[in-house]
Image (cartoon, rainbow, N blue to C red; front, side, top):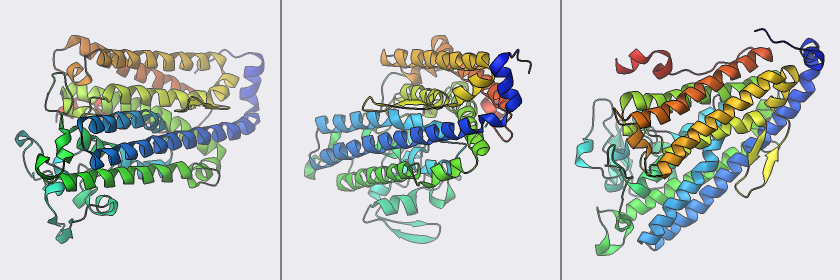
Length: 419
C-alpha cells in the first residue's frame, strides 16, 4: 500500500513501539464495551424472564404480547455484542448456547404437518420434547418428565451431536413465543396463540404446562449464560485477562472480530446466502420477523468497536481510546475512509430496517424476482464487503499478523452453494 504520510503520522509509523501504550488503552476500552454490552443483554433478558413469568402465570393475549415485546427489546443489545465473536475464543466457545440458528424447531414443540418428520440427517428433527416425556437419545433412555435448564443445556442442545438441534438461547425462546412463520414470502410472522399457555380445558395443542416449563427453563438458561459472559469481561474476568495479556494479539482479536462479522458472517451467511437461496428460513430471526433489526444492530456493533463507543440501554455512554485512534495516528485518511464506510453500512442497513418497519418485511425481500428486495439486501451486503476491504487495509497499516477474516461460500465460491 502506498500512503502519503507527512509529519506526525509518518513519525508514528517509523516509531512503531511508541503506539504500544495506546494499544493497552484501546484494549481496556474494548473490554469495557464488552462488559457493558453483555450486562445490558443480561439485564434485558432478566426483563424478558419477568414477562415470561407473567405469561405462564396469567396467560392472555396481553401477557403474550408483552413477552414478545421484551424478547425484541433484548435482541438489540445482544446483537451489538456479536462483534466480540471470532477473535475471542471464550466467546466463540459459548456463543452457540445463546444465538445458534437456524434450529429444527420440531425438536422442541409441535410443528405444521408440512415440516415433515425425522430425516437421515436428524432423527430428532420432530421429536417434540414438549409432548414427549420419555425418549431414547444416542442409545440412552432420557427421562424428560421434568423440563429443566439442565435438561435443555446438557441433554437436548445439539442432541446426538447435531448442530441443528438447537434447544436453548434466543431462537428457542423466539419459537416458543411466536411459533412457526407459515407465511412463506408473504407478510406476517409466527402467530402462536396465547392459549398454547392456557390452563385446563382452554389449553390448545396440548401440554401447555410442559410448554410453559420449557419456556421458563430456556429463559432462565439465557439469563444465566449472559450473566456469566458479562462477568468474564469484568475487572478480573477471564476474557479481559486473555485479551490484555498480549497487546498485539489483543488488537488482532479486535480486528478479526470486526472483519469476520462484517464479511463472512453478516454479508455472507446471514444476508447473501438467504438471497441466493430465496429462502425465508434463512432469516436470522425467522419466527418473529425481526431480522432487519438483527442485521442493523450487528452492523452497529462493528462500528461501536472501531470507534470505541457504546450507548447503553439506559442512554449512558461507554467510550475510550479506540482502534480508530490507532489508525488515525498512522494514516488519518484511512481512518476517515473506514469511518465513512461504517456510516454507509449503517445507512444501507437502516434502509432495510425502515422498509421492514414500513411493511416490506425481510422475508418478502428474499423472494425470487423481487428486484426492490434484492436491491435493499445487496445494498447492505456490498457496503459490508466494502468496509471489510478498509478493515483489511487497517490491519496492514498497523503491521498485524494473524488476522484471519472468515469467508463464506456465498461470497467466495457462489457455485458451491448449490452443489
